[in-house]
Length: 260
Image (tube, rainbow, N blue to C red; front, side, top):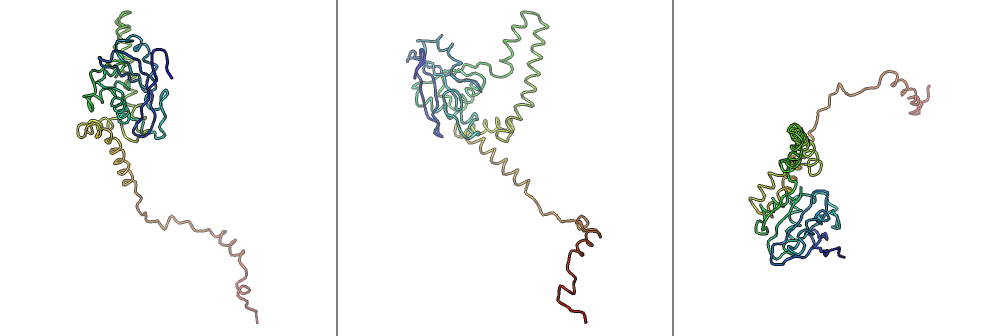
């Protein structure tokens, strides 16, 4: 299937998912533009970019796993940056004969930076769109400053508050509920893993750290024998004992003793 100005392309992930991309044709002698969308977005976001570059550069707009026309992964732990990087690496190796200009929006921008850290040879350049609080706030503050300096300060303050809430409360909660470890630990493990073992190290870093934290938590939560306090054992009161005694047969009859 194809749309106006593009062909549908597919590649397969290491865990067998069929992933989708839109392939807009362009000059084969120039570096293609690989467009990676944000967390909840898909390849359609880059239609305007593709039309503007039509015929000048090849544009590849991807649907990350679980988005658009790409397959959904059953394991929620595969929706993490190291796995996205592995997927993009497979796409570049299979469908790109030369280094690409990676155009990343939000999550796509973060993946662009991680790809530059782990697979720098695959990149001819990087374009970052709406990545981080500073880059996201600059356009809004500039527009507000055309109205009044006071409005620009208010907009900047709102962005700071939002980012503090997101970074200090929401993101840690989401990351901990998803994979059980804090986002700071995720980033540190990615950086250490990439520095120690390149792409493979980055891919293995988060699962290793998550497994280690689970093991440590299990060891700490291991139950120890607890001595039972005899005083805490409940004994039946007199009324209960009397009722129980009345319910029993007469002791003499129960053993078959006949009175003489």
